Length: 394
Image 1 (cartoon, helix red, strand yellow):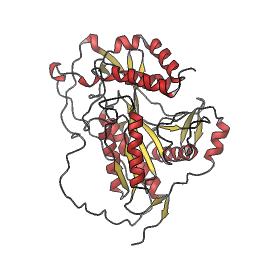
Image 2 (image 1 turned 60 degrees about the vertical axis):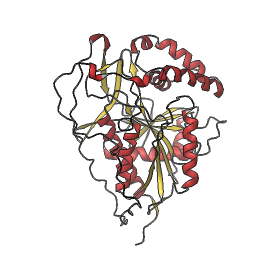
Image 3 (image 1 turned 180 degrees about the horizontal axis):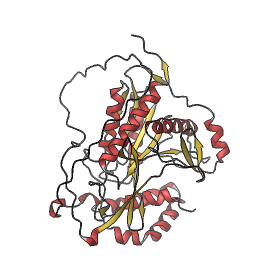
Image 4 (image 1 turned 180 degrees about the vertical axis):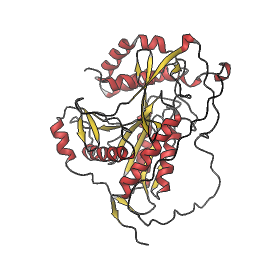
């Protein structure tokens, strides 16, 4: 089975770029190995996951001692403006109830105005970052639907996909404070570039157990936006990929099942990740300009059943993915990359409204990921409020 480029990209990200030159130099060897493993039974994939665990956690979280690297003069802090208000009908929602305990919580994200300095990377460890716009365009073998596009990597024809999308999604949303959205992270320790520069340090690992700078911080931004609209949201920050990478999806599945059992009102489950996109010795970051500012682009991954994967909800999830992409594009043109429709589970067999979101890549900055999550939060709020099953009655 030929290895899709997405799988190779994800695998190279897992392997880490802390030894980038040797690993990237052996890209074909890695691709052949991964391609063989992906065609094996699930138990072989578990064995391969163990191999990746050794590669990733054999030192990947050690990171770089940035204090030992000389710095250039301080660069001005990046300021990300608030997203424009979403045009949705007034819902007359009541104020959110005060929590029983008013104990202060630690901040989930670092201050955006914190001064940072771009390090001077020794030439032997420096490689380029290339910023590109990966928004869908006509004539690129994609299915256009509404304001977005779908990349079909399944055995289904585009005609069949169009037939599925002719029906609207059937999720039910309520104008109250019951939890309706679960945000979680299978690979919580995935992190981003620390500096907005044209080069990166190949010794970087782009992983961190600090929930202030990894995917948990990005999820917190989206959760805060949803809560500002009065939408009930749960944000789980469990690090399912630490201290072991192998079995991350299994552990994440247990977390999801627990919340679905405790809160049957949950309609949407979003697993937030970040991508990784190597090209030769360079790293690619998907980026767009919205409201005059850089934002990481978002790719929705929608799993589908190849006939023996027991995924009863995949068609409904695809409809939701297409609608969500439309609302994100309304926040800003080119915010999204094409929806990636693939024969993979990613725990999307557990519920309707279940999607995986790749927010930028490891070459994007945390601020760019924050802005993307903020825009996506506004988009999801608009989708929910425009599709309420019942109106709130005061």
